[in-house]
Image (cartoon, rainbow, N blue to C red; front, side):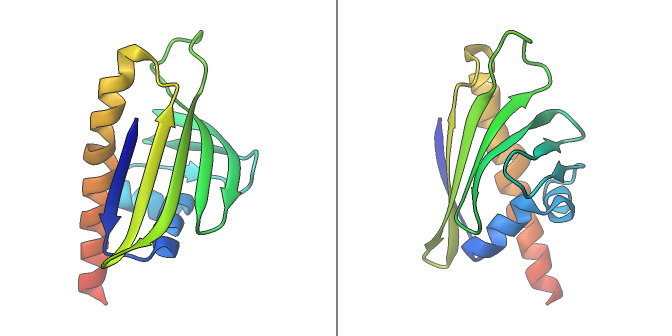
Length: 131
């Protein structure tokens, strides 16, 4: 699955929203704990999503082993890759998510805009209003 989303924020700011536990939680409206280290673990949506950081290029790219809590134990972790780049008017996140079990592909595809992209845009708009 691939998605690209443009935000009115710099790539560095978008990277920080994803990697900073407090900002991630605030932007999604749900508890998240994210290690900033390669090999470090993360949880999001109060433990509904979890995994491990496989690679981090600060302000540029994040690669994670990723899984949902409701996946079968026999299902391997999926791989989530996020690239952060400049775009007209701000920054863009290019997402590639491979290895999602077929029974959850539709849910994960629809979940990104619902649980990430729309709340992030609202979070950024609110922050701009406060500055």
